Image (cartoon, rainbow, N blue to C red):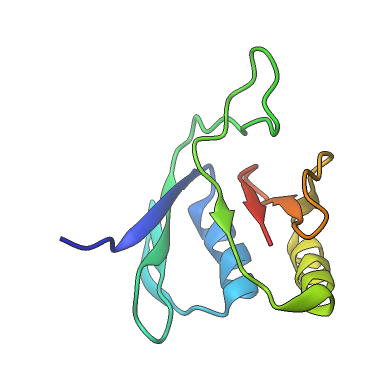
Amino acid sequence: MKLTSVVLDAPDPRMLAEFYRGLLGWPVAADEPDWVTLRPAGGGPGLSFQLEPRHVRPGWPAGPGDQQMQLHLDFEVEGQAALETAVANAVAAGATMAQVQPQPDVRVLIDPAGHPFCF
């Protein structure tokens, strides 16, 4: 058994796949009306995006009554300059900075569908 993909639900899977394709540079491996998969060129697990018309954006950090985050993606960058560049590129592509930043050397951002991710 092996992990083939992490799947994120989204109201617009193609839009969210395009966001992450821009961040990671991974090519599209599957593109169907309700499902898009990105895979790294060197192999390994990919990221898939599945249509969920009733998707509710999670709150982060979740407050009382908020939809809680079920998972988040962590992306490693090397050094402060790379961190600043990654954040700037993600924001330019449509991410937003989370209001709460719990660590000085980590940045929490929110993708266009509301999923938190970290650099």
